[in-house]
Length: 114
Image 1 (tube, helix red, strand yellow):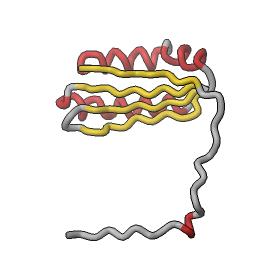
Image 2 (cartoon, rainbow, N blue to C red):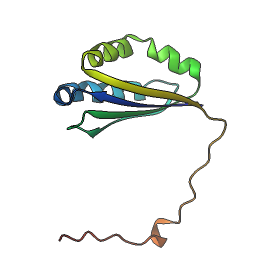
Image 3 (tube, rainbow, N blue to C red):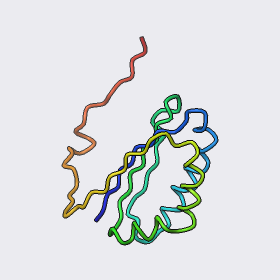
């Protein structure tokens, strides 16, 4: 399994314009047979920070997807607004669920307005 984590800084003024394309790209990627998960999060619209987290069955599957017309269109639309990009691929040899207590054993969080 391959995990890709990317942090993009884009021009803050472009975030609202690019948001529909980010959501469309996420939905299209979910349909890829070798994509295990794909998330795009706008962490800060004011700062233009976007994080992308992807899980793929293999690096070959990821590289094949990056060459598809949808991803080329995504990169072409993002490029003019892109300030920086830090993307890293991780090779994963195993995974296991996070051992959490059952929901019934977790404390209830109360929201308090001050």
